[in-house]
Length: 236
Ligand code: SAH
Image (tube, rainbow, N blue to C red; front, top):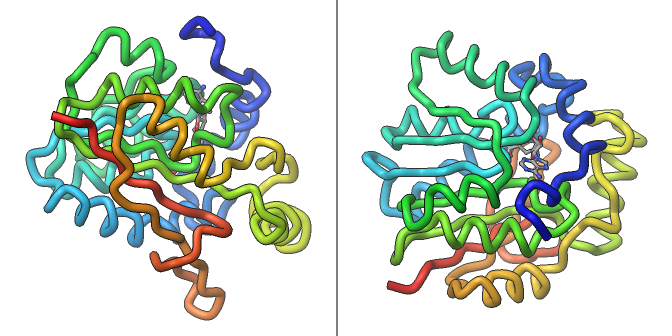
């Protein structure tokens, strides 16, 4: 697969269409806002603090995670293919007086120009939107410096993830637009770990993400059956 072909234009159009609402805490991206404190803490722990780390956020969207990592003192680059999401991300960073470099690129194209460059590579809730997730994982591996940490998150291919992410969030609660997720693209942890392994990385942790509807927040913990993180290291 050539670098530019690992993009589903329908997916990018979907994210461009709702781009203006990235930073609306009660809009379509509410789940990502609710998730952010939990994942920021988790990611920060993986690298013993974000301060001074050179980070690339692959599939950064409107910059919810990218900006929060920059606020914690990281030198962050965010890449995405949805240009309207990036416009919103850039404006929001200006408003918040946070410095983040945003660039429209695929993971593969960015990796071919920036090999072995980052202390931390994050790729959150993005792999389930691309035709060939293994190719994105390989690009993330290429972007990482030897010894760097990589954190991936995605949705598992289980009936419970189907119920929560599609039936619950899209159809019942109408929290996110219909068609946001396609069940066929959800990724089993065993498959993600195989992609990671094939990219020459070592899996160091896998943790579930759990939603608590009472306080509307997420926490990490055992159980990978819906949303989960896999953490990897690039060998020295
Ligand atoms: N990582 C962000 C956004 C997740 S939404 C967060 O968790 O807050 C998924 C993002 O992946 C969207 O912004 C979408 O435009 C982007 N995306 C989908 N396919 C892509 C591709 N092939 N290359 C780069 N970005 C892509």
